[in-house]
Image (cartoon, rainbow, N blue to C red; front, top):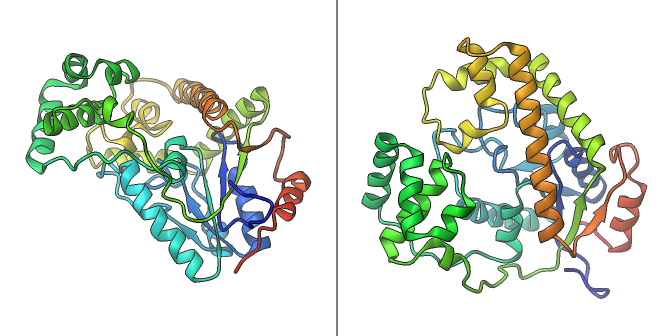
Length: 317
Protein backbone atom coordinates (compact mmCIF):
# COMPACT_ATOMS: atom_id res chain seq x y z
CA UNK A 1 0.00 0.00 0.00
CA UNK A 2 1.24 3.50 -0.86
CA UNK A 3 0.82 6.47 1.48
CA UNK A 4 0.80 10.13 0.50
CA UNK A 5 4.41 10.49 1.65
CA UNK A 6 5.76 7.41 -0.08
CA UNK A 7 6.44 6.73 -3.74
CA UNK A 8 5.97 3.10 -4.78
CA UNK A 9 9.00 0.98 -5.58
CA UNK A 10 6.95 -1.62 -7.46
CA UNK A 11 3.69 -1.80 -9.37
CA UNK A 12 1.29 -4.77 -9.32
CA UNK A 13 -1.10 -5.20 -12.27
CA UNK A 14 -3.66 -7.99 -11.96
CA UNK A 15 -6.62 -8.90 -14.11
CA UNK A 16 -8.41 -11.80 -15.77
CA UNK A 17 -7.15 -13.49 -18.90
CA UNK A 18 -7.51 -11.42 -22.10
CA UNK A 19 -8.12 -8.20 -20.17
CA UNK A 20 -5.25 -6.27 -21.79
CA UNK A 21 -2.70 -6.44 -18.98
CA UNK A 22 0.36 -6.92 -21.19
CA UNK A 23 -0.30 -3.85 -23.33
CA UNK A 24 -0.76 -1.68 -20.26
CA UNK A 25 2.34 -3.02 -18.53
CA UNK A 26 4.43 -2.44 -21.65
CA UNK A 27 3.25 1.15 -22.02
CA UNK A 28 3.89 1.90 -18.34
CA UNK A 29 7.28 0.20 -18.37
CA UNK A 30 8.40 2.32 -21.31
CA UNK A 31 7.14 5.47 -19.59
CA UNK A 32 8.75 4.94 -16.18
CA UNK A 33 11.77 2.77 -16.94
CA UNK A 34 10.27 -0.48 -15.78
CA UNK A 35 11.04 -4.19 -15.81
CA UNK A 36 8.04 -6.48 -16.38
CA UNK A 37 7.90 -9.55 -14.13
CA UNK A 38 5.47 -12.36 -14.89
CA UNK A 39 2.84 -13.38 -12.32
CA UNK A 40 0.94 -15.88 -14.46
CA UNK A 41 1.31 -19.54 -13.52
CA UNK A 42 1.11 -20.76 -17.13
CA UNK A 43 3.31 -18.16 -18.82
CA UNK A 44 6.28 -19.51 -16.87
CA UNK A 45 6.39 -22.59 -19.15
CA UNK A 46 8.67 -22.49 -22.17
CA UNK A 47 6.73 -24.51 -24.77
CA UNK A 48 3.47 -22.59 -24.66
CA UNK A 49 4.21 -19.09 -25.88
CA UNK A 50 1.14 -18.77 -28.11
CA UNK A 51 -1.35 -20.75 -26.07
CA UNK A 52 -0.57 -18.90 -22.84
CA UNK A 53 -0.41 -15.50 -24.60
CA UNK A 54 3.14 -14.74 -23.53
CA UNK A 55 4.48 -11.39 -24.77
CA UNK A 56 5.92 -11.52 -28.27
CA UNK A 57 9.66 -11.40 -28.94
CA UNK A 58 9.21 -7.88 -30.29
CA UNK A 59 7.49 -6.70 -27.10
CA UNK A 60 10.07 -8.39 -24.90
CA UNK A 61 12.80 -6.57 -26.78
CA UNK A 62 11.28 -3.18 -25.93
CA UNK A 63 11.69 -3.45 -22.15
CA UNK A 64 13.21 -6.08 -19.83
CA UNK A 65 10.96 -9.07 -19.07
CA UNK A 66 11.54 -11.65 -16.34
CA UNK A 67 10.06 -15.08 -15.44
CA UNK A 68 8.53 -15.79 -18.85
CA UNK A 69 9.11 -19.25 -20.31
CA UNK A 70 11.87 -20.10 -17.85
CA UNK A 71 10.40 -23.42 -16.65
CA UNK A 72 10.27 -26.72 -18.53
CA UNK A 73 6.72 -28.20 -18.74
CA UNK A 74 7.94 -31.37 -17.02
CA UNK A 75 8.31 -29.38 -13.78
CA UNK A 76 5.46 -28.86 -11.31
CA UNK A 77 6.36 -25.24 -10.52
CA UNK A 78 4.98 -24.06 -7.17
CA UNK A 79 3.86 -20.72 -5.78
CA UNK A 80 6.75 -20.92 -3.30
CA UNK A 81 9.26 -21.31 -6.12
CA UNK A 82 7.67 -18.40 -7.97
CA UNK A 83 7.81 -16.21 -4.85
CA UNK A 84 11.55 -16.85 -4.52
CA UNK A 85 12.14 -16.19 -8.24
CA UNK A 86 10.00 -13.05 -8.14
CA UNK A 87 11.86 -11.52 -5.21
CA UNK A 88 15.15 -12.19 -6.98
CA UNK A 89 13.81 -10.49 -10.13
CA UNK A 90 12.53 -7.53 -8.10
CA UNK A 91 15.89 -7.13 -6.38
CA UNK A 92 17.65 -7.24 -9.73
CA UNK A 93 15.34 -4.55 -11.12
CA UNK A 94 15.93 -2.29 -8.12
CA UNK A 95 19.69 -2.78 -8.47
CA UNK A 96 19.40 -1.54 -12.06
CA UNK A 97 17.26 1.44 -11.02
CA UNK A 98 14.21 -0.05 -12.75
CA UNK A 99 10.63 -0.12 -11.48
CA UNK A 100 9.46 -3.75 -11.12
CA UNK A 101 6.05 -4.17 -12.74
CA UNK A 102 4.57 -7.47 -11.60
CA UNK A 103 1.77 -8.47 -13.95
CA UNK A 104 -0.47 -11.50 -14.25
CA UNK A 105 -3.70 -13.27 -13.50
CA UNK A 106 -2.64 -15.73 -10.80
CA UNK A 107 -4.05 -14.30 -7.61
CA UNK A 108 -2.08 -16.61 -5.32
CA UNK A 109 1.16 -15.28 -6.76
CA UNK A 110 0.24 -11.75 -5.73
CA UNK A 111 -0.82 -12.95 -2.28
CA UNK A 112 2.55 -14.68 -1.91
CA UNK A 113 4.21 -11.29 -2.36
CA UNK A 114 1.82 -9.12 -0.37
CA UNK A 115 0.84 -11.51 2.45
CA UNK A 116 3.62 -14.09 2.50
CA UNK A 117 3.32 -17.87 2.65
CA UNK A 118 2.75 -20.22 5.55
CA UNK A 119 6.00 -21.69 6.87
CA UNK A 120 5.28 -25.29 5.85
CA UNK A 121 8.24 -27.64 6.42
CA UNK A 122 9.80 -29.05 3.28
CA UNK A 123 8.53 -32.50 2.32
CA UNK A 124 11.17 -35.25 2.31
CA UNK A 125 11.95 -36.43 -1.22
CA UNK A 126 10.97 -40.09 -0.58
CA UNK A 127 7.46 -39.08 0.50
CA UNK A 128 7.04 -36.89 -2.58
CA UNK A 129 8.33 -39.61 -4.92
CA UNK A 130 6.07 -42.26 -3.38
CA UNK A 131 2.98 -40.09 -3.75
CA UNK A 132 3.77 -39.30 -7.37
CA UNK A 133 4.02 -43.03 -8.00
CA UNK A 134 0.69 -43.60 -6.27
CA UNK A 135 -0.86 -40.88 -8.41
CA UNK A 136 0.38 -42.62 -11.54
CA UNK A 137 -0.87 -46.03 -10.41
CA UNK A 138 -4.13 -45.15 -8.64
CA UNK A 139 -5.23 -41.94 -10.34
CA UNK A 140 -6.18 -38.55 -8.95
CA UNK A 141 -9.73 -39.44 -7.92
CA UNK A 142 -8.57 -42.29 -5.68
CA UNK A 143 -6.06 -40.01 -3.97
CA UNK A 144 -8.73 -37.33 -3.63
CA UNK A 145 -10.81 -39.83 -1.66
CA UNK A 146 -7.80 -40.44 0.60
CA UNK A 147 -7.31 -36.70 1.05
CA UNK A 148 -10.89 -36.38 2.29
CA UNK A 149 -9.97 -38.66 5.19
CA UNK A 150 -7.05 -36.54 6.43
CA UNK A 151 -7.86 -33.02 5.16
CA UNK A 152 -11.56 -32.68 4.36
CA UNK A 153 -11.36 -28.88 4.15
CA UNK A 154 -8.69 -28.98 1.44
CA UNK A 155 -10.38 -31.83 -0.44
CA UNK A 156 -13.58 -29.80 -0.61
CA UNK A 157 -11.72 -27.00 -2.40
CA UNK A 158 -10.04 -29.23 -4.98
CA UNK A 159 -11.38 -30.89 -8.08
CA UNK A 160 -11.05 -34.71 -7.91
CA UNK A 161 -8.91 -34.54 -11.09
CA UNK A 162 -6.42 -31.99 -9.69
CA UNK A 163 -3.66 -34.52 -9.09
CA UNK A 164 -0.80 -32.14 -8.27
CA UNK A 165 -2.68 -30.22 -5.59
CA UNK A 166 -4.12 -33.42 -4.16
CA UNK A 167 -0.70 -35.01 -3.67
CA UNK A 168 0.55 -31.73 -2.22
CA UNK A 169 -2.10 -32.03 0.48
CA UNK A 170 -1.26 -35.66 1.11
CA UNK A 171 2.50 -35.10 1.24
CA UNK A 172 2.17 -32.27 3.77
CA UNK A 173 -0.04 -34.43 5.99
CA UNK A 174 2.29 -37.41 5.75
CA UNK A 175 5.36 -35.28 6.45
CA UNK A 176 3.97 -33.15 9.28
CA UNK A 177 0.92 -34.94 10.66
CA UNK A 178 -1.01 -31.69 10.20
CA UNK A 179 -3.47 -30.95 7.36
CA UNK A 180 -2.31 -28.46 4.76
CA UNK A 181 -5.54 -26.50 5.27
CA UNK A 182 -4.46 -25.88 8.89
CA UNK A 183 -0.98 -24.79 7.84
CA UNK A 184 -2.58 -22.34 5.41
CA UNK A 185 -4.62 -20.77 8.21
CA UNK A 186 -1.55 -19.80 10.20
CA UNK A 187 -0.81 -16.06 10.35
CA UNK A 188 1.67 -14.86 7.77
CA UNK A 189 3.69 -11.69 7.52
CA UNK A 190 4.16 -9.60 4.41
CA UNK A 191 7.68 -10.09 3.06
CA UNK A 192 7.56 -6.71 1.31
CA UNK A 193 9.79 -4.02 2.85
CA UNK A 194 8.91 -1.30 0.34
CA UNK A 195 5.68 0.41 -0.78
CA UNK A 196 3.82 -0.87 -3.84
CA UNK A 197 1.00 0.43 -6.03
CA UNK A 198 -1.77 -1.92 -7.16
CA UNK A 199 -3.89 -1.84 -10.32
CA UNK A 200 -6.76 -4.26 -10.89
CA UNK A 201 -8.37 -4.55 -14.33
CA UNK A 202 -12.02 -5.57 -14.10
CA UNK A 203 -13.67 -5.08 -17.52
CA UNK A 204 -17.31 -5.66 -18.35
CA UNK A 205 -17.91 -9.39 -18.66
CA UNK A 206 -19.39 -9.57 -22.16
CA UNK A 207 -16.50 -7.51 -23.55
CA UNK A 208 -14.01 -9.80 -21.84
CA UNK A 209 -15.70 -12.97 -23.08
CA UNK A 210 -15.59 -11.66 -26.63
CA UNK A 211 -11.87 -11.03 -26.24
CA UNK A 212 -11.35 -14.56 -24.89
CA UNK A 213 -13.12 -16.10 -27.89
CA UNK A 214 -11.35 -13.96 -30.45
CA UNK A 215 -7.93 -14.50 -28.93
CA UNK A 216 -8.19 -18.29 -28.99
CA UNK A 217 -9.01 -18.24 -32.69
CA UNK A 218 -5.99 -15.99 -33.22
CA UNK A 219 -3.82 -18.45 -31.30
CA UNK A 220 -4.86 -21.24 -33.65
CA UNK A 221 -4.12 -19.08 -36.69
CA UNK A 222 -0.65 -18.24 -35.35
CA UNK A 223 0.38 -21.86 -34.76
CA UNK A 224 -0.91 -23.06 -31.39
CA UNK A 225 -1.64 -26.49 -32.89
CA UNK A 226 2.07 -26.99 -33.56
CA UNK A 227 2.89 -25.96 -29.98
CA UNK A 228 0.47 -28.49 -28.57
CA UNK A 229 1.66 -31.24 -30.91
CA UNK A 230 5.25 -30.72 -29.74
CA UNK A 231 4.12 -30.78 -26.12
CA UNK A 232 2.01 -33.91 -26.60
CA UNK A 233 4.95 -35.67 -28.25
CA UNK A 234 6.80 -35.52 -24.95
CA UNK A 235 4.13 -37.75 -23.35
CA UNK A 236 4.19 -35.86 -20.07
CA UNK A 237 1.83 -36.70 -17.23
CA UNK A 238 -1.58 -35.05 -17.77
CA UNK A 239 -1.49 -34.10 -14.09
CA UNK A 240 1.39 -31.66 -14.60
CA UNK A 241 0.33 -27.99 -14.40
CA UNK A 242 1.54 -27.18 -17.92
CA UNK A 243 -0.72 -29.88 -19.34
CA UNK A 244 -3.68 -28.11 -17.77
CA UNK A 245 -3.10 -24.85 -19.63
CA UNK A 246 -6.27 -23.61 -21.30
CA UNK A 247 -6.72 -25.28 -24.67
CA UNK A 248 -4.11 -28.01 -24.28
CA UNK A 249 -6.52 -30.87 -23.56
CA UNK A 250 -8.93 -29.80 -26.29
CA UNK A 251 -6.30 -29.44 -28.99
CA UNK A 252 -4.74 -32.79 -28.04
CA UNK A 253 -8.21 -34.33 -28.34
CA UNK A 254 -8.53 -32.83 -31.82
CA UNK A 255 -5.12 -34.10 -32.88
CA UNK A 256 -6.01 -37.55 -31.54
CA UNK A 257 -9.20 -37.61 -33.60
CA UNK A 258 -11.51 -37.44 -30.57
CA UNK A 259 -13.20 -34.20 -31.64
CA UNK A 260 -13.31 -31.86 -34.60
CA UNK A 261 -11.31 -28.64 -34.66
CA UNK A 262 -14.54 -26.67 -34.37
CA UNK A 263 -15.52 -28.64 -31.27
CA UNK A 264 -12.07 -28.23 -29.76
CA UNK A 265 -12.11 -24.47 -30.31
CA UNK A 266 -15.62 -24.08 -28.92
CA UNK A 267 -14.83 -26.14 -25.82
CA UNK A 268 -11.54 -24.33 -25.19
CA UNK A 269 -13.28 -20.97 -25.57
CA UNK A 270 -15.90 -22.05 -23.04
CA UNK A 271 -13.25 -23.17 -20.56
CA UNK A 272 -11.42 -19.87 -21.02
CA UNK A 273 -14.58 -17.86 -20.32
CA UNK A 274 -15.25 -19.93 -17.20
CA UNK A 275 -11.70 -19.40 -16.03
CA UNK A 276 -12.00 -15.63 -16.56
CA UNK A 277 -15.20 -15.62 -14.52
CA UNK A 278 -13.49 -17.48 -11.65
CA UNK A 279 -10.58 -15.05 -11.76
CA UNK A 280 -12.88 -12.04 -11.54
CA UNK A 281 -14.76 -13.54 -8.61
CA UNK A 282 -11.46 -14.18 -6.80
CA UNK A 283 -10.16 -10.68 -7.49
CA UNK A 284 -13.42 -9.10 -6.38
CA UNK A 285 -13.27 -10.94 -3.05
CA UNK A 286 -9.53 -10.85 -2.38
CA UNK A 287 -8.33 -7.54 -3.86
CA UNK A 288 -10.82 -5.18 -2.30
CA UNK A 289 -8.33 -2.36 -1.64
CA UNK A 290 -6.73 -2.41 -5.09
CA UNK A 291 -7.20 0.51 -7.50
CA UNK A 292 -9.82 -0.84 -9.89
CA UNK A 293 -10.19 0.15 -13.54
CA UNK A 294 -13.22 -1.08 -15.47
CA UNK A 295 -12.99 0.86 -18.73
CA UNK A 296 -12.83 -1.19 -21.91
CA UNK A 297 -9.98 -1.22 -24.46
CA UNK A 298 -7.37 -0.12 -21.94
CA UNK A 299 -4.58 -0.22 -24.49
CA UNK A 300 -6.31 2.55 -26.44
CA UNK A 301 -7.75 4.49 -23.49
CA UNK A 302 -5.15 4.62 -20.77
CA UNK A 303 -5.59 8.24 -19.68
CA UNK A 304 -7.04 7.28 -16.29
CA UNK A 305 -4.32 4.74 -15.64
CA UNK A 306 -1.53 7.16 -16.54
CA UNK A 307 -3.21 9.82 -14.41
CA UNK A 308 -3.05 7.37 -11.50
CA UNK A 309 0.60 6.58 -12.26
CA UNK A 310 1.45 10.29 -12.26
CA UNK A 311 -0.50 10.96 -9.07
CA UNK A 312 1.35 8.34 -7.03
CA UNK A 313 4.75 9.46 -8.33
CA UNK A 314 5.81 6.21 -9.95
CA UNK A 315 9.29 6.89 -11.33
CA UNK A 316 12.48 4.93 -11.86
CA UNK A 317 15.49 5.23 -9.60
